[in-house]
Amino acid sequence: MKKELTLLITMLLFTACKQDPKAELKELVAYWQDREIVFPEAMQFARYAEEVVDYPFQEAQNKVLIYIDSVGCTRCKLQLNRWKELKAYTDSLTNETVSYIFIFQSSDYEKIRSMVKADDFDHPIYLDRNTDFVRINPLPDNSSFHTFLLDKDNKVLVIGNPVLNPTVKDLYIKEISGMQTEDKLPETQLIFETVEYDLGTIQLGDTIERQIKLRNSGSSVFRLKDIISSCDCTEGFAEWTLLEVGKEDEITMRYKADKEGDFLRTLTLYGNIPEESVTLQFTGVVK
Image (tube, rainbow, N blue to C red; front, side):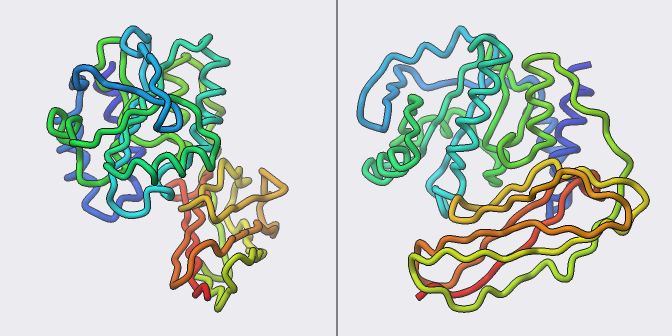
């Protein structure tokens, strides 16, 4: 049963992967099925990357392991506010029996401290300055697969990032609490004017909004499950969750120009559509 569950989880996670999903699916399932994660000895955790604290995570019934490497935009990968929301939710379901293990692969102490303080993220973190963790546990190249749900023996139950994919989040919650997710609606189709938007030139520090129109052109009601942005400088939200057949509505994209230069940001809508999501791209220049 566990193998069937992991296979289902991985298939759902990889549906939108641009590589050959079947090949990657077989490889990762074969490697990670019931595989034990080994933690470095004498891991030292700290709040705000400065206050050393005791964090006895090993005895937890379940563990969520989040490994953040230093490749690319670290802040975009973190989504710390979403992690705070998920932790609060699982704590309410399980009486705080789930441990969250945040491992940052970085030697830039000041950068990590600045980011966690900016988001008031006071959960203990471990700085893997010497890449000890990945030497013991070689991770997939794709950072989307650097997050795991583990059992009490540190064996992998689920691979995938629940704050970046609501389908994976549902599977985490089901595995942790036994709660059934809401009934799945039949697939429908959405039509957008375009999925690529040029925001032009924006002044540094400005915040702009765009209204994105969409229409349900399919044969079933569309249920908006979530809107996930590629970085915390970009937000997406809607004042509705259901869009009836043939109806049109809009979502709002908000972008804060916090860094000079060219940019590419995305919003991904999740719901009962083919491949479970559609991604909108936003480009421009900040001066």
